[in-house]
Image (cartoon, rainbow, N blue to C red; front, side, top):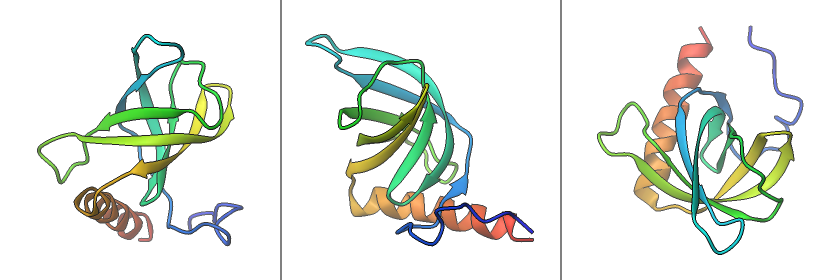
Length: 116
């Protein structure tokens, strides 16, 4: 049986482990910079990523990643809510219903797969 995350009782959405490439665009100054990272987990409201950048809590990043059920990559804006080293907890701030539905489909399929 999977171990429940310690914050599972206070989370708004079901969070599942999911590893995928994530492209991150950000502006630490007036210059646009890009970096590649890896996701750790995802939910309808956000994603945790490892990316070698120096972003501050409250800053906005642009993410690009592809979910298995999609042909085109999702491009989303997210705000940094927490950080530990190069691991960032991000909350999606600009997300369409269609994008949220794609992520919900991914989360649901991974939830079912890990509950067996």
